[in-house]
Length: 321
Image 1 (cartoon, rainbow, N blue to C red):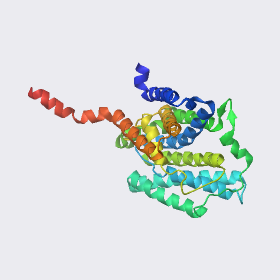
Image 2 (image 1 turned 90 degrees about the vertical axis):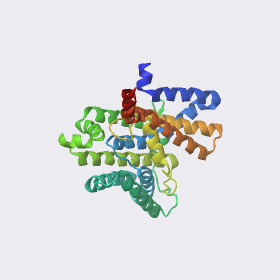
Image 3 (image 1 turned 45 degrees about the vertical axis):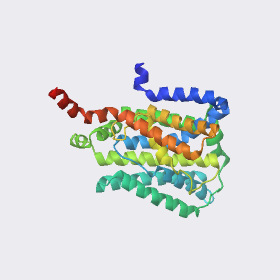
Image 4 (image 1 turned 180 degrees about the vertical axis):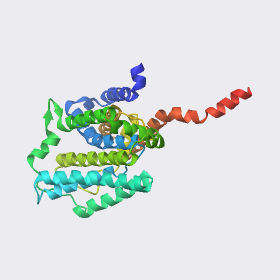
């Protein structure tokens, strides 16, 4: 019981799997489960990056645009450069966007939502201009497609890569000074600064990680779709990434969150999308349901904080009686 209370998202994951397996028998087919894991892994990389940013008390709305930029760069550059060069340049572009977000936010003390919503539009515009708003098929090597269709020990390659990224992220957050400082900054930025933490450097690092992981998701998407596309790729992934992190217990106020929670949150979002598709639920209603789930998750995890706001009123009422 204590385990369920500590990790409620695990219980939600199990219950959803049972419910969807009952109402849609094909949900439990091995091929369908493989598709769920692949899709959840793509979102998982973006959500994992969002987890870092949220922990330091930030927000990154440019992640979907970075996915799109990475995909068109990898597909487009493969026509003139070796594929490995295009991949590295795309990943560096994602890191550059993250660093730019972090530097502008910390140097000018701007609100993250303003900076990253601006970079979301700018990066999407760059990707659309580079691709001329058309899909780019490029000259992609067959080895790249193994990232989407290959298996390791019976698990899809994207899932294995995502699990490896989660292990590295968990070790970083739990066992390095920079990881612990991210929690300190998110919990109380001023206290962290007075304790000698280089707040600006750690925040920039968090945004750089977010940019890199989003660009890596773009690489996996190219491997899966065999092309790069800027107009629709990554659209709405900002909401999904925030929802996955919040469902997994990452506080939108900063200072709290776990990698395992983000992993489960990504699986829950992927499971919901797949299950609703099998049941024929309208895609627009799927977005509405995800928004409702996000609101419920935020309310449930912040309920204690909300109640503390009203504690003075309760104390006064009790004093009068």
